[in-house]
Length: 446
Ligand SMILES: [Ca+2]
Ligand SMILES: [Ca+2]
Ligand SMILES: [Ca+2]
Image 1 (cartoon, helix red, strand yellow):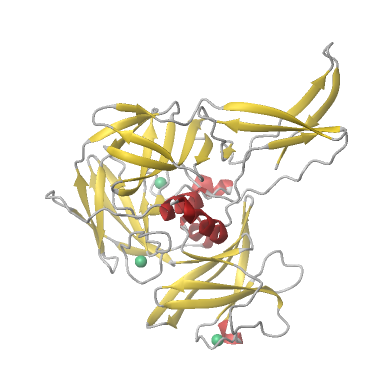
Image 2 (cartoon, helix red, strand yellow):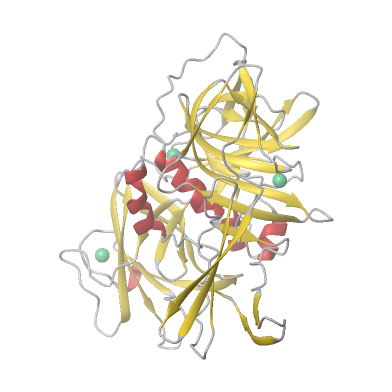
């Protein structure tokens, strides 16, 4: 499963932030801070690609709850970005696909090929002027004649969200393959392109005492709703659940912070089994045309896992496929069985609904655990965290680095402050034996 990671790296530009700080004394220029690129969405996506669903669609004898749905187009590019989940993605390449070349006079063209169920859509992006930060023109070879013509060109709107850059093209509606392709194209950080649906289907279901808003989006753009992820090259559709009950999917607060991520993970791929806000596990069935969905509660034997952390979100794969499980008050409930954990996001409240976040991604070797019935299992990772300082000589100089590790020695993949930023860079102070300060130097991310 880990073998899937390079594909993810290529397609989604995963840049692991090691929370490694370097400081050099004796005049060496510190390395430049590295931009943060990996959003939670992409981590979730990776976890999904890492798991192959093997569960049988064996609906229990329980009665299903039917939920009528209606289509809601994205109201603006912000909403599209917030609710975007992978979609159909390709990275840009300066090398044209076989048989293609850029029309003359196009500045710095880059190419991509989107694999859709109805065929491969080849496109090209370029800058409208040399001063443009990102390519803001897009061509799509709709008719497959290996030429990019004026009528196949779109203009984009650029925007920034925190450290991330987006250029939005469309929405477009065009005949393609045997049918019609309707979607939005979003260029992310100037190096990869997402094709997304133009909106989602939403409805409401009553679970226990609570009304829960629920939605589904045709993320793999095949015109059918309800596709589950079936392995790394077959991405499914997105499920939207208003976990915190604020009436929206995703968190507008996160969007305001420019962080397209949320500990609640209200937008995620449709999995075989879904934990709903009432804490129970459900199986979902969706009408292909998006007109309705059905929820069937699964009363599986469960156990608990524990971690020294107020809130957490676990991305794991069990015998029943990929699962996303939420932890509250240091505990989470899971169906009994063996699991591989691919990532965990940990949160600690910091006044008025704000939260510190830390994440661990088990990229090389997933953490394993077994959940037993009516028992609490301690998770083999997580807090308390430990700061490590190391010093390495290099000629007349010394390089100091700081890393943050969890209780099992796993290096933390990222930490964000309640404002969605990286923690401030610490300062290294060197003193002599008498305690007199000889040198101070700031650490830098890198
Ligand atoms: Ca063409
Ligand atoms: Ca679909
Ligand atoms: Ca919400």
